[in-house]
Length: 174
Image 1 (cartoon, rainbow, N blue to C red):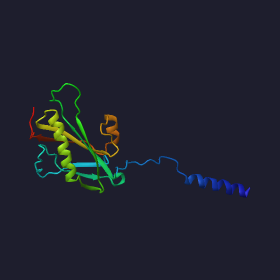
Image 2 (cartoon, helix red, strand yellow):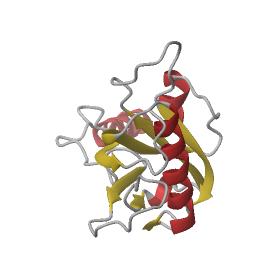
Image 3 (cartoon, rainbow, N blue to C red):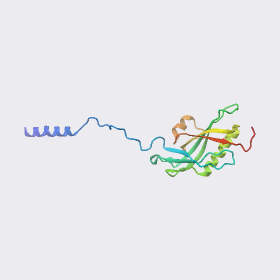
Image 4 (cartoon, rainbow, N blue to C red):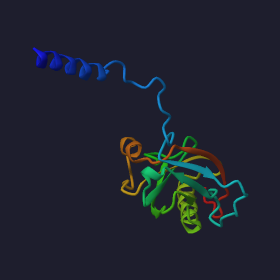
């Protein structure tokens, strides 16, 4: 009988120590890094004019240290609403991959120069001139050269950053 009482007492002590009630946190924890894995910003200094006729300002980035990528690709979407061409018109340009080795930095000058030249060739081909609305984003380096919206949304590393640039075509043919 003595052992039965001790066993019942031990069981009660054990059960009273296990609080299976409301274990949920009262205030949700704030995420360590809000939003997309990469945050973009444009350089505020006046960009040096590019001989191609269009200059995208230098793009600075800061990355979530827990979601750091070694390489990324720049995606530029541009407004094609004023294009007067028959047939399909592409409204985006996907650059090749570039190294983004640090948590903070800027895309290399030669990479931005290549982006300016590539964008100028698109704008020239579609006879777009004057002010052009752009949005830019970083995506995983595995992004295909002609991604659909679904692939782009899955592989996008940053939010879209809008900007308006001026295209002065050095070789007008339109």
